[in-house]
Length: 127
Image (cartoon, rainbow, N blue to C red):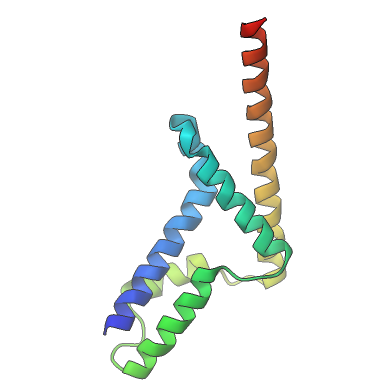
């Protein structure tokens, strides 16, 4: 039973992490100090996708799920039933990786534009 709970919590955390990566740029507008954390997440996503690696949470989810199946009980929880298709969409791995890489690059361009605008403001106000 504990493995089911841990699997559910890991999937839930993975889902929230994905939401943060996708929508974190909007949080940065409100709380600029989290930009470094969001940028770190974007770079992490870029690196694992460029090298064809998997997110460490995926390995943890698979491990916990395998132990939960061995333990018996229900095969799929509410969280697994609804969040797994969102976290792991039914698309080819190549399509997912290319989409993630393009998304991250797009957000890095946005960050670059924001940094440039911020730098220009500082430069014009000090001169």
